[in-house]
Image (tube, rainbow, N blue to C red; front, top):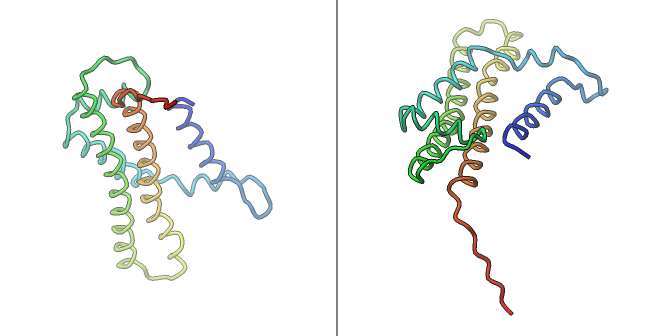
Length: 162
């Protein structure tokens, strides 16, 4: 399976899990809206990419994207390592930013909570940043592993003993 195919499969299964009511196996598209929060998305992905660029370079960002999307790129091993490092840092940063956003949301929630009936929906929005962080961590992990397998793995030598 290709990288884009595996990402499409991941998102497809995730969307199905979001919209299917497993108690009576019906589909409720409203469930998808519970997982969409633009401020959480903006807090996680662009910031994680910025951190990845800050640690490596904009060139490593471009190479990492090109190399994982299957474009034929002939680069030295050191440049491929730098692109791999960009993907690794970006993935780890997205996870940490997701957790940070959830803690920040919980703190803000604690200061603004007047009615206990608002607790459930407010906590759900706070946890969406963790959801995005874990999701992007998975995407960048797979991208990093693809890059390593395709550009950084040593040819394996198998010896047959007789």
